[in-house]
Image 1 (cartoon, rainbow, N blue to C red):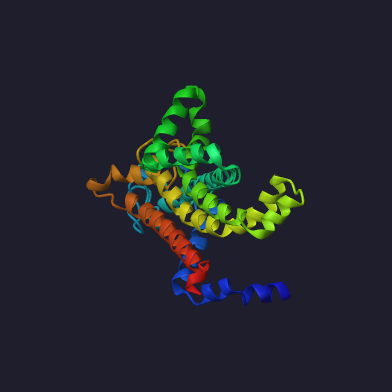
Image 2 (cartoon, rainbow, N blue to C red):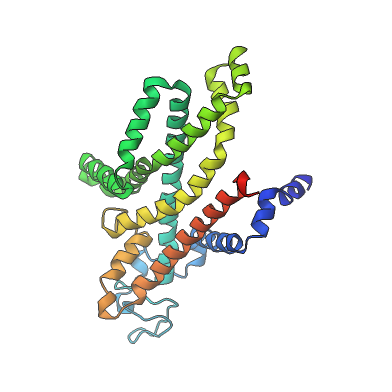
Length: 304
């Protein structure tokens, strides 16, 4: 209990309790994440099971009985008779998995490159940072599109759908590692000149141990902030790629794929097919982004 009490009385916990925006954002994000994680238990239907679909239920408006079957759905159905509420829960699982995995991959890659550039310096630092500068000159979504297209050209057609999600994760991760690398490099160069690091080098501590035990823990604060904000950007990037038709396969639609499907029926009167997945994506991305903004302010010593 003492640890819980100390955590409850910490500066970050106090800042969180006194920030209504952070509390609401955390509640919304946690609700969506838990709902997606337990989608098989919460969703009334499995929208990706062809045996459970009935085409006669297609285009059923929200909370209105279908004129053929009499079935009623909370958020309506799409053109294939899939329950929109269930597709949002299952689609959010894919969006969150891709977002978390892509950010984790970009974070690990960026930390390694940033620490390597800061510790070695010289031509290694110059080469890595020039590569980062070149990549920053292009929008990240274009980099992800390029990487995704090249990977799909290399992978055999029979395996494309099986590895599409992993290719998407790598594409988004490779397009977002630069921010982590630059922040880690800047913070690591400051820590590298500290007296305790110089003392560890003098007594013969291995460089890898110095980096992992002395420098890395002191640069993780900014990395966590960028990772939180980057999660929202990764989810939006996945939705953008899926909306363009180059993301996850149609057999495993994410929120972006659902929006793309609904866009095709927007002007024919079936507005609910695009509206509710769009609201879910907006709520998820906005809540995570607001949490990242709060975390950035809470960890900023100048604002205390």
